[in-house]
Image (cartoon, rainbow, N blue to C red; front, top):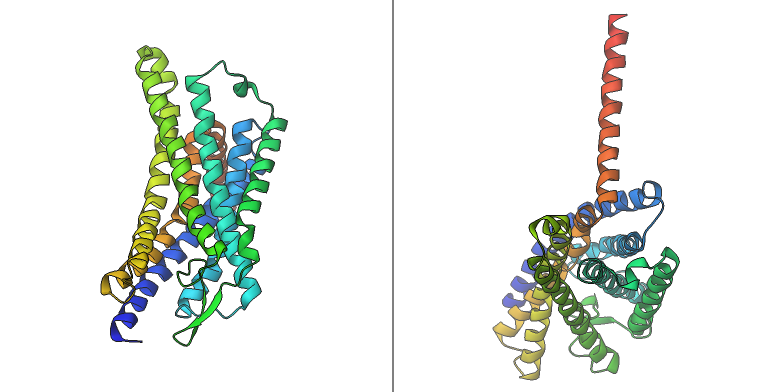
Length: 317
């Protein structure tokens, strides 16, 4: 390994370790609170609640994978857990990232129909049909990411054992599908989310000011979804396309190619921020979620006041 390789690897690790640590802590806490609110404070459920709940599950499971990626980078990108755990980890990361994207897209579609087509029969969908729909999405995502379970992703290089789903030197069909799926799972939902966003904006422009205020929250929701989605996933997709172009052009030994590889892995860590920020989407998209969270805060404040009052009373006695 030459000095430039050591510098690049060190730079990646120095950025990835604190980034993954912050994402894990904030994402785990935020999604754990969201799960608690959905399970114990939001009954009965509506179809939109079903979508948000499954989005929370996907995000929380993705957060559970981050300690293993964190250990990988802390060990200087050396995987110590073996081949089967590597396959399971990469499968869980890919599955829940795809699930998170799918359910985030469903949130935008749900708002689109409620605002642009308020009388559409999809708006009167029951919780049962919504549940059947999300089960179908989970099955579809499992089928589309299960290839990661059947290929070996551990390889030796630079006296280290790597565990990577992106390996340019693997020419198998699974490796090609992984790159294709990584791009498609971003581009297709992005087109849908942007379509929903602009459709809602155009619809509201044609409404009177009174009606516009009524649907103001809907536009905030889809804009929030679009911004979070683009900021988290666009850099890694651009980075991956740059690496693939450089690889196909036979520039593997150039400094620009090494910088592109390191940049891609850094932006890949940024994709987890999506799962960390999704509780913000819940807060804006569901007034019931917001009210439940505010009631929880009010309850804590009342408990503190009661405790302080009891302490003062005991002192006076």
